[in-house]
Image (cartoon, rainbow, N blue to C red; front, side):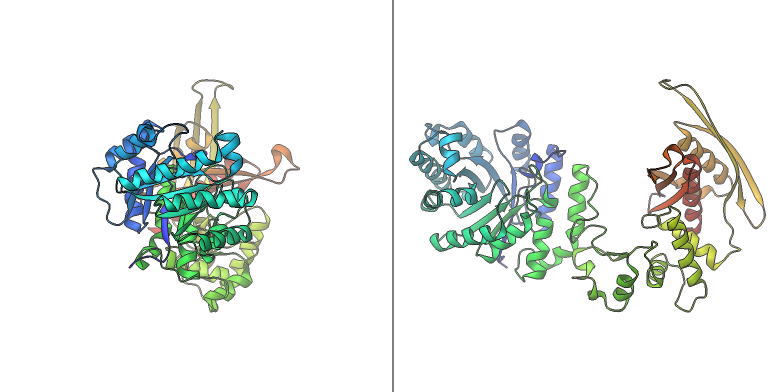
Length: 524
């Protein structure tokens, strides 16, 4: 089915210009394959001739067959005073052998005269010559009209002349670019409507997020008649980034009823977002709309209670429609609904009739008031609920521990040693003692605790600490302030968080480590 709105992804070119983004050739190929499988219509691979990496990408891409997407190569118009046939950039663009070529040219007269230092008529000729050259070579040509909105606000007649020059030369779409990201949705709407009324060819939109309007401006353009939207996955890009296609896609499909990707791709949206973050070596933004971990997370007791009864009372869509899921958080703001929902999520039998429900809620609120936080520590919360429901349940208890460090500040190889004495079965009183070394006190404690426990529970060999965070609570007590330690553990199949709080950072760390091991045993 022909899409009502075409999607043009520029993650591999514009997105790679974002701070902290550095894709290898293999990274770009993997992302291109993923975008193709998802149903993106056009994938901009880069700028041939701008760097060796992009040239290598296009060389490799020639050997691949994309199922749905068409690959695009990007470049500027021919250079001033150079015939298009003699311009080296144009030759490199042809050598990329992509079915689509995207050409960027000047719209704003300020750029033409002060940056390009060309006469207005020469800029029009550069646009027309370049587009005509690639149309003669059988290419689909998109014309990116740089600074369209700034140019139109400054010199509307000249801006229109540049768009018309591109159209008359055969451009398949005129893409209006808010290059500075400074336009308002009302301005985008007005100027897009103007272009739509003056041009016969399809109108596209390319927005940046400098004012936080990247998505809003793209949607305003679509409402005004644009049929082609450019952006990047997760909004990567120059400065504050480009328009985020991860938000564009569900907005078009679920809010506006505009067909843009296959229906069976929408539930894979979160997976696509996280895949690109993983390739970019970035942690997914938990607060990203639609696909973030917090997008459908409910913390307030009133919210959780309402969602339990009528999901759409606090959720604008079904989370699973974009591959996400509902999460109910537990904190000092929680009500009984939060506890019940979290218990179900953790496979713990608890109901409104359970007499322990009130006690569990009171414990959570008390611990939160003392600095604990259970939002990312579901392991510690599960233990709290389990032990309240079954006070006699066997658990791990640290009888004593000792940590020592041999070496001064700046010592190249300081020696850190830890010993622990734990009761590994509270019902029988079985104890285990171990001493181990580590790169620091927490690592040494982790090793010693694991060594003591695996003698009785060998399955704990699989458990590993993968993340460790420390937060000082309250800024008035200096080094005597309470410390909250949050750790994340895995057994290779699942991950969980646990928390410890104490004025002693070592003790807080040990408490979180013990909870991690105990939760692993509880799950087993």
